[in-house]
Length: 360
Image (cartoon, rainbow, N blue to C red; front, side, top):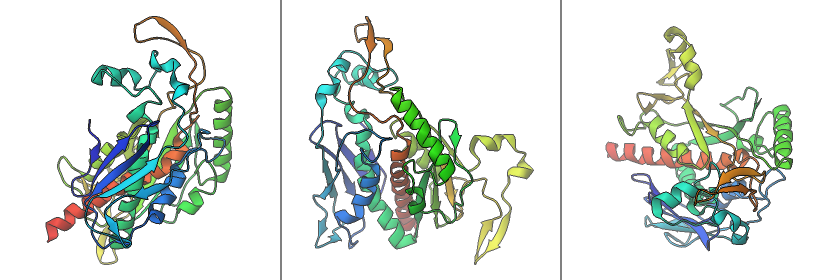
């Protein structure tokens, strides 16, 4: 199984959704960085279940413990072990699903690939697997802030057909994003999103949406053409997340409707460097960061596990009716915001260290 990510800043995650715990091992973090659980916990708190009536009611504190790689509050340059114990497991909720693969879930494909699977909650295919990514990404965020001043902010830009209004990506911060339980910084749209999610939840169904992200103060020069282009690594990272179905950067698919004369970003002189008048490219040219803000969007499908009755078949091919038990998000998008941010941080810190190695 491919459970590791990164080249110089390398992260390996472990654990199943209803096992003893989940976590990560971070290899490649620079030494002498001040680091404690308090640096990591805020992003885990933003990701954890049970935050509001729009999320799964599963109650997990998701408290992280640093097991290795830190002494007297400083990183040693050795592997950093991170563990979050599961406290509110209910594997019995998944008894019915042990013989019936959930529609649009990974039950069937994991069984076909490995000949066995963690039937309780989906195991590694569960969104709980992202805890290790978020914990590791929080460390990456601190490295990026301290050494390069990089700021990463994601927000919910749509849920279903409800869309967020215009956002000032130069000034948007996490406080504004977290002001509403939907993590949409447009108050009017946020209320309509919340009502949509509640309607879906009450119907025992689910709904998807889009998370947008901006990465500011990314220096020009990061990215490794041709196969490890910066946008390619971001796309790989985002599409490795559970429930993701689309990625676009800059103008994305909408840019295909423009002429080249409309889409091109003219260069301008900007504080001792070249900048661009517009940013249809989303901060990347030729797979290398241009110095403009990185702008991208990630599409999340409706959660596959729903309580609504569905006609399907069991693993033997016999007709079956499935009404999933357990506790599940009617919409995963608000909780995906810190996951997108921390995965972006993992991509950027690896790109930064690779560029730094070139300059030595």
